[in-house]
Length: 256
Ligand code: PTJ
Image 1: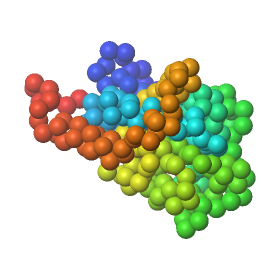
Image 2: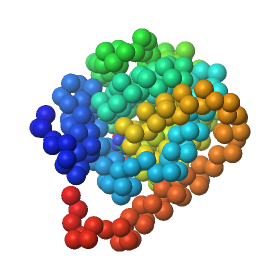
Image 3: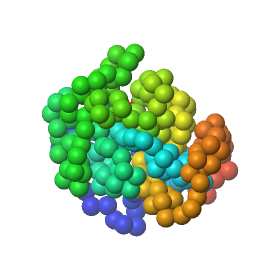
Image 4: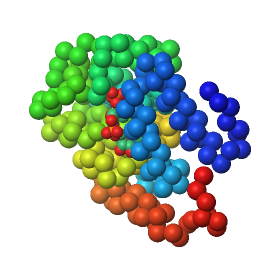
């Protein structure tokens, strides 16, 4: 990987891009994952590459849902495995969730490579290899899930994917928490809890909230009941429109 100076103005974004590149080289991330990363980067740029207040509030509600769940499961694809493997394993531990590999471009080799990668980052058990159940009314490979994993879950964290599985999980009566930088994406639009943020920031942020909530006397039910997903989507869209409206452009108009 090219050395990126710590004081480079886009340091974090470039490091993230290199992680995806390495993921492809290791057989963890699909080539389409590179395209998804490019889309994500554009939205992140417009959001100021920061966790907005509304994304932070949504992350806290997500933590409350995961802590209250009977059986929470965190779904892992090739991009998540490359970008934040240690952080997703840590989140699973913080909320007592299962980890399950679920891929759009599913191959047995890639499922195994991702499971191994998560184990190398501390996961004790990784589901998704058996794939002995199906999400109804979903024709592609993402329908393949474990019967004692996503199929049985009541709350599922779905980071960064196309929208039809999120909708299908909702139809099954599950609460879906979606992390996606695009507030207009179908998965964000159908989520019970959309978190419009980069997975590299959102995943550790949910874990931080979960640990804080666990140690407090906060009413988790109150927290989840008062949540408005539409307001979160509208706030993210507003932040993007403000950024493109010219009010916050750099003085010389140069974009890195
Ligand atoms: O590993 P697989 O086979 O399961 O494939 C995973 C990808 C991501 C390739 C697949 O799900 C896909 O093609 O997704 P899409 O349809 O490109 O959607 C990806 C969404 O994630 C887009 O809305 C992006 O804006 C968003 N996104 C990309 N990078 C990030 C992100 N959201 C949060 N954090 C990111 N780092």
